[in-house]
Image (tube, rainbow, N blue to C red):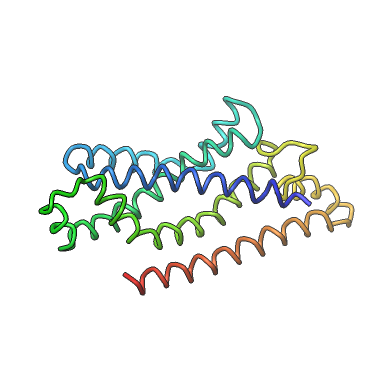
Length: 204
């Protein structure tokens, strides 16, 4: 109960932030110069702003609910993905095969999307998987304090919040069961993310 909302929200954040962060990083790496520096400055500025605080401000401006929280956290996680992809793409761009493709007249867009992107895709998937656990906790925290998913929609974070009164009445089942689901999911995702990271590093 509540698993659909608890899992769909983080998935939307990870997909949106990964697509936008990857596109931004590839553009920064390929165009370089002032554009790359501008992207780095913007990314650093957003990265310095806590994602959970951004989500709280978004819910304060646009109202409580999953939509505002997902939009805010998607923006907050873009810098995390962009920095990692940019670093990996810079390493790829310095390899001889990229220089050979440029000499052959292959367009930059084709090199970035058909050659560089596939070679860093393993790292992107691994970091997206790791991000899922962090986003899940962020969204659960927002629901716990009443700024995320609203009743009657079921959500693990909201269930923990609603179950706190039961804890005081020695009926902790609701809060404990939802908390356990969060812990198990985050731990499982982190293990999977670590293995994917190790595999991507082994292939690089």
